[in-house]
Length: 120
Image (cartoon, rainbow, N blue to C red; front, side, top):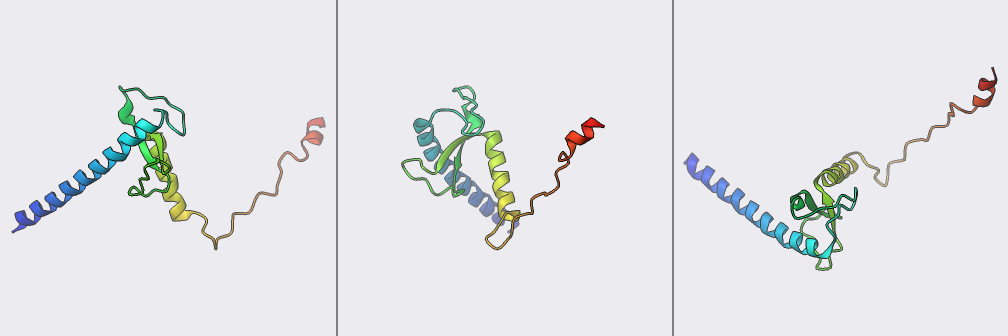
């Protein structure tokens, strides 16, 4: 009985991975035809030999939002893509919501009296 459950779970996971891979290939192929092979953040250029390191980032973070004009896509290298998602997670977790007030700005200027200190 346990093996039946495991097989069923394995089948579900395999099917989900298949659907995800099909979805990614569709918009990935289209985006690679639309946009130059350059990271939108760090400007690193890509060729056929390292193209696997160029990812498609969804600007609104919704992987099911794939308009045919590519307006929700941005090509990012794997490093910038990871950074973008880390920043998004931090914003969601800790970011400013409408009710939060921003942190106060520093009012102390350590160099305010520098000229007189230099004369001493």
